[in-house]
Length: 321
Ligand code: AMP
Ligand code: GLY
Image (cartoon, rainbow, N blue to C red; front, side, top):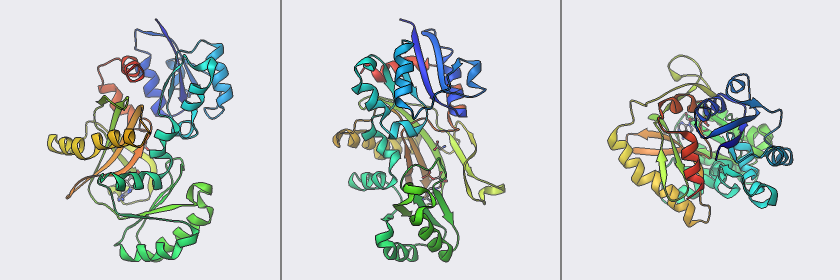
């Protein structure tokens, strides 16, 4: 059957997904909400907010949508997948993206760190603090070497991570974050040990049992020459990642990818969708610096052009396990 797909989001990532889906022989029509000037080349933009679930659901029901692909994290963390599954009129729509329980890997950095600690998945040492134990936060910062890494617990449009050179400034930023710098998202702050190494972005398309890894990318996030400036939402990206060797791939598989997928199952949070691993390859081996519950932005733009397979077929396989 030819498919009618609704894709949510408006970034370069969604433009790359729309481009790839538009090549599928199984596609009847593609809608993107809200989309952008690029996505309009591959489908029809629809002026809907991905966070307005009633409007998205109504559009899907009225237009016979057969698959919903969720590009951005906000609707996933706010439970759009659960919303579609719970709604009788939308039960036939195949949703590509995890449930709210799965999306917690990105929705709460405190959850993600606790999850990795529970399952011995390698990551940076950390302490989570709130306004109630800020003094413990200061003591943890004092126990670390510069630079200092502060992360808002919740979603902050890719801007909730601060990497700071001076201890005094780190303490002052911690106070400001807990005071609402990123609204409710920074009511809890994760303070992390700084890891040096090479970053790798790996996407696993998974149904919780099987998985397909996509070509590996390297993201560049700091502004300025030589990666010396502040963190940004993203400065550029390349793929393949020349630092991701076969040995590292094997170690990541054994210590990170499979343990994460299996532990999510064990916690009753089976992850169905695109699981993004932000890794730091350190001298002591690969460590997770972040999980995302969707395709990377901007990495998708360099990863999908290298994929020979039909992306719709992979989505279909995730859904029909
Ligand atoms: P995140 O949103 O958690 O990926 O953090 C954004 C960026 O900050 C990452 O891509 C890294 O460049 C950097 N970063 C995050 N955590 C650490 C860490 N513990 N050590 C060094 N750099 C980090
Ligand atoms: N490129 C990192 C992210 O998508 O969050």
